[in-house]
Amino acid sequence: MKQNLNLFNSLNYLLDMHWKYFIPGICLISFSVGLYGQNGNEELSRKILVKNAVDNSYTLKNRKAELEKDRLDKKKLYQTYLPNVSLNSTYMQLDDDIQFGVPPITLELAPGVSKTIVIPPMILQESEIWKADISASMVLFSGLKVPLTLKALKHRENANRELIRIDEALVIKETVDYYDRLALIDQSLKVLDDSKARLDEENAFANKAFKQGLISAYDLSKIDIAIQELEAKRIDLAAKRSLTLSKLRQLTGYDISPESLHPVLSIWKLQSGETEMSQVPEAKALAEVVAVRSVSQDLALTSYMPGIYAFSKKELRTEDLSALDPQGYIGIGLKWSLFDGMQGARDYQKACIERQIAENNYNDAISLLNLQVEKCKSELDVAYQLISVAEKKKITAAKGLQIATRQYELGLGSITERLIAETDLQTAQLEYLQAVYNQRMAVLALLRVQGKLTPDVINE
Image (cartoon, rainbow, N blue to C red; front, side, top):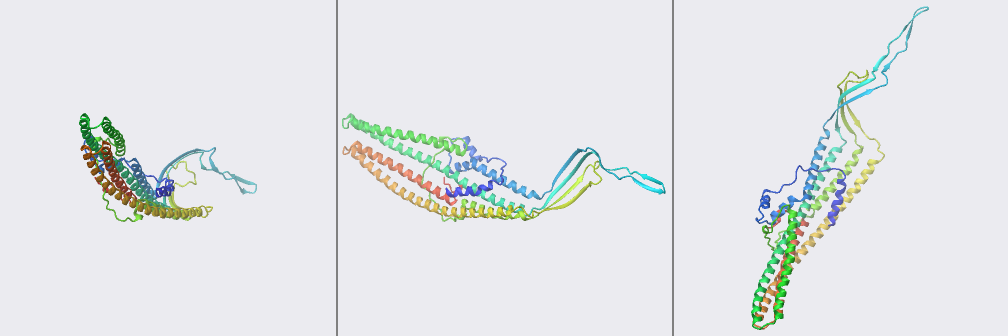
């Protein structure tokens, strides 16, 4: 969907900020599901499959892992104000001692008598220097960078929670879709079984009539052809059932035996009122993006704020210190960029543009979501109407088959008319099942767009 594309494009710059998430372990399949995995004969419902598909989704696991990394980055930001302590050691070899010398001093003691005094040079630093010290520094004021970054990170975390809801809804929709496909296939096979039973009964009746010379071999062959066509449809549905089961195994992450699933396809009665589009996950995620962009504007202005820090140092080895080196000190420093070549101003202008883009994406998403809700509601109304039409058609086809069968048995109708009536009933029953399936898919689509598709709303 277009709004999803806008959403991920709007969040793309956040991914470049290297704010990551971590999750300590993978999601575990619940104990009840473990029992189902051990006993393939246990019946699995939609709710159970949906729960395990959500737990097994690697996309959701990665989303949650990224969310945990975000929490670690928040802790890291809080720890910015903790002191950094380091132990340092160096060894140096100078080419000579550093000395301070005084020229010889000549004193006039008497006329013609003088004395020269030579003062030995003072050694300020010996040529071999080995130092060891412990130093510490601590941020006192970050120029508002830390609190603003923390605020942006919280908004990003909220946005990713909404993305988790979006991905979870997609997993639920896909799982229910394949489960209902399996129900459609199973009930279609039941329709074929019923048709096959009627044709077998008709075939037995036709064989007796053929022996008595009441029908031709050509009429008898038509029944056999109809039976073979049913078998071909059965083979096709059986292959589709196998593929659908494989997909459900892949979604849920554990082996599902064919005997453990007995899905039933029925009309989904939806109790869904109006939804505020601003509360839909896509819209809420984009709203968080707008908030992050707004904080980015403030962050761009922090380049003009000073940073204040404290520092200290203590020499652990004093033997090789020079006469001018202190044995320890403590102090406060300030760093204030007075002119940065207009880089901060350009960053602020860029942040303003990015915020405007985010707001445009949000407004566009709200508009598209409203349109999609109307589209889904319209499709759901159409689905209900088609179910009503298919049901009437099924009733009419059943009556037609009864009439055609009775006429054929009384010799008032041909085998062709009988087989056409059989095909009409079979087609009407399959179309009804397809209409019910389409109605369920319309409900899924509406719940998905409204942001209400959660495991709790899935019926058994």
